[in-house]
Image (cartoon, rainbow, N blue to C red; front, top):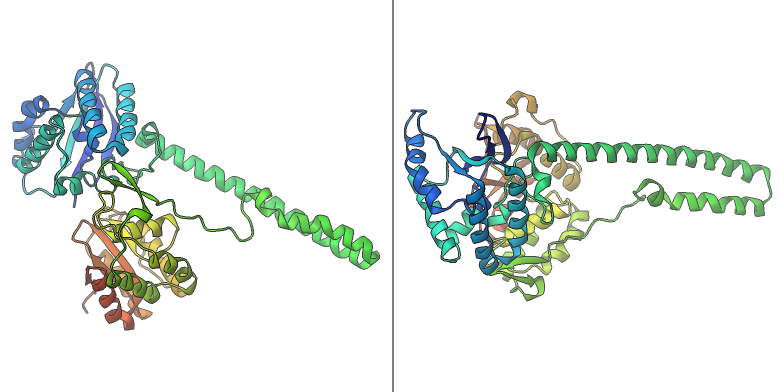
Length: 432
């Protein structure tokens, strides 16, 4: 469970409001940088009372006007340049988008739900201390970094929680982004379908003519006719945008955050032998031969990311590599992830790694609840066990679910491998 909050525009002349961004896990660090001590002081008591009372008189909101925005973003940019320069440009994009949007309105930070803190007082005191440290240019503590900057949660927007590094913030107005994304996908599908359709019709005509020439003309005519046919067949990638056997994209994970400096993979320390063996053994137990051919060379050269600020652990880096390369092995799901994604990940892992399929629960039965909904994992684990497989969970002590699909008979080996990489093994099983 994580903090839920929204940023919205509040008109000074009307009661209308417009959603800008929504955060459904960690409170984004960029949002904290919009506040100052005066804003906190003026709203602190009402904020605390709003979570300790059912009286709707009290609000959990913090209003930011254009003067606040101008002043606080200058302070924030100075702080980021000195302490976290790699995300300075991202904050500029974010703050510029807000300045273009705010006009004569107020921006309101509204807390819908708090978690990761025992009380509202703890949360607001924590935010207040961070703002004091920002004004003094003091870097975040390890705990605050994990809470607010871990894996780019300083943006955390509904619709795309993993904001791509070079994206423009103007693309992440929720409705605009979702519409743009959907249109782009549909347009690409339409183009691919049309070009593939044309390609195969022309190929069929070529093939018929190819055989006709072969039967009715002498060999040298057949050879000359075959040249354009072979050229056409070899040009599928040019004509349709996708070749017969497309190459897998290489991972772009080559730079990380480290005290404001970019560091290449070669500069990182080697991963210890025990952890490396654990990742390799887990790969052999849970992946197909084809996936192993891709992963094992990567794992043999794996570095230690446990002290790097962007990832905080080697496991997080490995998961990012898998995501970048569409390898369905270690599955990471946020606590609020939709059940449809869980279904899709399980199907892909089963099919790609073991060549199997099974009937999974109907996602419509869950009324679009998240994977945290009661018994979801148990329900999806049951059909896996019927085909001698199961879900195993890597306990990362966080609000995410990290899953591997493995054979039931390999459970003890999987547990040992997970222990070697530094984690405990959990499982969900419906009792009969």
